Image 1 (cartoon, helix red, strand yellow):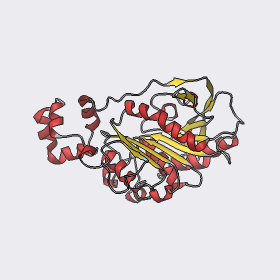
Image 2 (cartoon, rainbow, N blue to C red):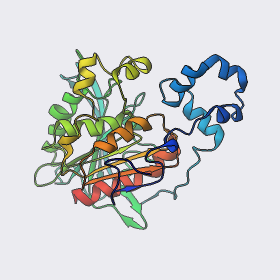
Image 3 (cartoon, one colour):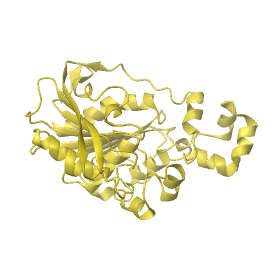
Image 4 (cartoon, rainbow, N blue to C red):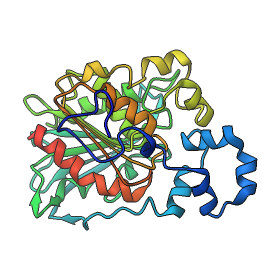
Length: 322
């Protein structure tokens, strides 16, 4: 099914609107072995919160139901290139942050290449920005037997603040004013070579956010299972660190600022049993037409879906960066 703004060749996968969006039911809760006591404890309102991801449990139940079991071809890599890791003091974050830069084989500092800024998820750092591979492996990924075009990738520690500015900690400023200029001094992402953003979960949200805030700098974006909240109240109920205030949520709400993505290649992938899917659907309905690809397919907010979607996301960005 598709709703307003969801039709067109850039969209694929069932359940773009309607009952398929929320597959957790009372019957499924019982089938998962949680019993009538859990239903009574949650109550009707509690179940509604679980269904919409405000309370934990949806992904756990989906895993018991088998909805998280998605297949993906084995990852194949060519010869790895150089990777450099280190630390720098971030004025924007007011603390030291770690970083890793990965080059494709045959390249290194001084090579002029496109750049993908990888943003990590909550609870992760620059060492765990991807699910099925390391950052050093990513430029060497082979897709259907073919190597990616030469691209460099970088990741840095962004903390737990959903990549938006907080009092005393501005991970967005760190990326834009410190990390990217550092990479450009090494030859990466310097015009005419382009810069893209990519991330998973909180990092997927951050990738979209940076593309909306800095459309002249970010040329393309790929987000896997982006953690898109539908309201400040929902975000605060689950994660008080996500936004400093309701005004900050409004300023960094990727759903209401999609006009900034006009003409920009955007790929968003979300599992049908991902608790953030209502937010992703709201985002998809407002994405400018013509350059947006939205994938809604089987899967959860978990490693199997993330790993499945990493190769096509990198291939998507490669088409627009090379």
